[in-house]
Every structure is written in structure tokens, then in C-alpha cells.
Length: 460
Ligand SMILES: Cc1cc2nc3c(=O)[nH]c(=O)nc-3n(C[C@H](O)[C@H](O)[C@H](O)COP(=O)(O)OP(=O)(O)OC[C@H]3O[C@@H](n4cnc5c(N)ncnc54)[C@H](O)[C@@H]3O)c2cc1C
Image (cartoon, rainbow, N blue to C red):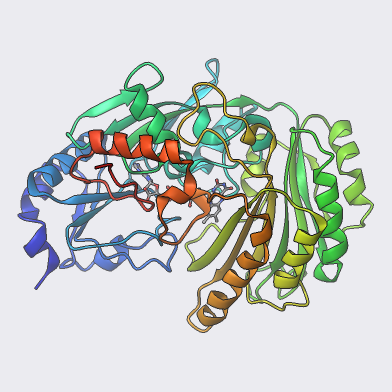
């Protein structure tokens, strides 16, 4: 029996209610419609709805409310793997709700629900403005901001979620609200770090930062130099000001035909960094790294939009398996442990193993910040592999091995955006914050309509 006939009563009514498309398992396009960016996620919703406007979202929420259904809001599906599906859940894809308005004088942008980061960074950059975008150009602005948001400007300007100025959201009562520091302040607080648990966001207003001078780039060495480079980077991070945000990575480039020949099939250790300031300032800061004689050195003055592709993140959907750990600090032994698990000697199947430098403004909770007021960690471990069937068993072994290797330096929390498995959401917050989020969940969504990738249960 087809799922929607059983559980989404009267699909035709839903189709009549929305301008956007409604796709059921009976439709030939269902398998395409249910795809997430991360192709390793096998999403099985009762029905997929592609709203085209906030009115459509209101209609879907009111329909779900009448029929006791659940809604999983999704922008791109970059973090779709933790979602748990049942036959009562509608996948609400905001991918057709696009649009960005830049207010140059007010230094803010209003973005529609399905907007991707590059769609903001490009027009903002024309005015020497930058949002706190992440390393990937096609991650969704909304999902990223609801979960935190560690950008290339993070050590100077903090988590992106705390630079969100207002949110338009349809709540479980079917109302579209505009929430900010003055209106529905508790909900505004919860949305900034509490993820997609409290409603469907239809638009967001975010701060843009003047960025007239930016020195950024990457340095690459053959991975035989991993120990020398990673240790030097570690020491360097302890000396740099908050204007510098950087990461160091082991990268194993697959032998694919569309990869440039000089990179194809090779293994590297790389350092990427963004430095707010002029050329002399930036060049002086990276001098210590240049002395390590990289094979490739792309550091230069760049417009803000260049940060979108600094990290060379994949822009097409891929099947990925990942792991992460927030690290309290990074002594030399931690770098040794990282290299033993992911460096040349380990010969691991991981595509990349990375450590990002946190700290600075990321670690400071300012008055008015949201539920994720800060990230209490000095560094962030992230690793990923391509989940091709033949690689999955090896990845499922290598990822936990790397994570375990860094356990002695664990910061005691997880980071929602980088967690791609199903975990208890208490991992992301201190106890008081989690309790407050649970209370707001009960108030705003008593029937637990909204199914986030990292669910927060209402309190009793
Ligand atoms: C290649 C890559 C690079 C990344 N780089 C960074 C980085 O530099 N910094 C960083 O902090 N993170 C980074 N991330 C993690 C990324 O921020 C998370 O995966 C984030 O959840 C993606 O948001 P999305 O909307 O694209 O994904 P989705 O999977 O669509 O959304 C994730 C969750 O957000 C919620 N959500 C999304 N849209 C809405 C909405 N309209 N209303 C309500 N809830 C909604 C839902 O709960 C949803 O399950 C990266 C991830 C990848 C795969």
C-alpha cells in the first residue's frame, strides 16, 4: 500500500492548498524529490512538498496540524543523515524559495529560506561586505545559521547564528511571525543555535561585515611533510590575532578525470587561512608558514567572495560519511595522535582529515546571543570520506579511530552543524540551555510537529 494513501490523507487537498509541487511515492519524480545533498541519506518521507512562498509554508503547516502529521524542514540536505523518517513525516524542501536583498547602508541581508551561501556572498562582496558564511558555497544559509555557523571570519566575529538579526518563521500554530530581539525574544533565542526544532524558517536577516581588505589563500605540501607542517601550524595558531581564522588538513585527492592533473591521485597536507587586513599585515603573518616552502601558495589580497571557495569544498551532491570532535586545546601530542590516525603512516581511506582553529570571538558569549552563545573549544576536528559501497566498511572503521585518537583533548561538547549521525541533542548544550530549549519546544510545538535533524524533545 502506498504510504500517502494511508498517512497523508487527501493529497489532492494538499495540492490544492499550495502553489508549489507536492510529490508522493506514487509519482515518478519521488526518488529525485527525496534526494538530499548528502547522497548517503536515504530519505523516505510520506510526501515531499516544495513550497514557493511563505503562504505555501503556512498552508502545509496548517494541513499537517489538522491531520496530525510531522514536518521535516530542509534546505539542501547537507546534514540530512541524522534524520529519522516515518510514514507520517512530510519533507518540506525550501529549495525553491530563493532570493537575497542586500541593504548596503544597513549592512544586512534578507535571505529567503532556500538561499545558498554563494547567493549572498557574491552580491555582498560587490560592496566589500561579507556575511559569516561557511567554507562551502552551496550550504544553505538557514540550516547553517540555525545550527551555529563557523566561518572564515569566525575568530573575529563569532558564530554566524549570533549575527542573525531577525527570523521569519511559521510556527506549529500555523502563524507566520517575524521574531527578533524585541518580538518573541525567547523563540528568537531558541532558533539561534537550537536548529530546526521550532518551526519552518521562511526568511532570515543577517549582518554583513565591512571587509575592504582581506588576505587569504591556501598552501599545499606533499603529505610526506605532514608532521613538519601540522606542528608548525599548531605553534603558529597560538601566536595569531583574532583577525586570522585557519585550518590544516590532510587531503587525499581521488584519481578522477575532472581533477587537474598536477593534483590527481596525490596526497597533501594543506593550510587555508583568511586574514582580515592589508597585504603587508597578511604577508607578515603567513611568513612563518611560507618558510616551510609550500609546493602551492595562493595567498593574496582577495574580495570577500573568494572565501566561498578557499577550502575547495565539493559543490555537487556526494555520498559522505563524517566525524567531528571539539577539542579543548591542541598540544603537540594531539597533532601526533591526529597524524598517527590520518597521516601518511595510517594510509587511511579518508578523503580529508582537518583541524580548524577556533577560539577568539567564538569563545565569548555576548549579551543578546542565542542558545548557542559560544563554542567552548580551541580547535575542531572534522573528517570525511566518500561513502562508495566498497569504501564504507573501511570508513566506518577509520572515522571512529581518528575521533578516538583525539579523545584526550575532547572539549566536552559536540557541534550541531558538524554532527552527521543521530545523537542525543544534550551533547550540544550545557544543561541549563538544553532545559530552556526543551521548555520552549513544549510551548511552541506541543505536538512535536517539527522534526529536526537533531531533535530537542519537549520537557514534561
Ligand atoms: C561540504 C560541507 C561544508 C561545510 N562547511 C561548514 C562550515 O564551514 N562551517 C559550519 O559551521 N558548518 C559547515 N558545514 C555544516 C553545515 O553548516 C550543516 O550541514 C548545516 O546543517 C547545513 O545546512 P543546510 O540547510 O544546507 O542543510 P539541511 O540538511 O537542509 O538542513 C539541516 C537542518 O537545518 C534545519 N533547517 C534547514 N532549513 C530550515 C528551515 N527553513 N526551517 C527550519 N529548519 C531548517 C533542519 O533541522 C535541517 O534538518 C558544512 C557541511 C558540508 C557538507
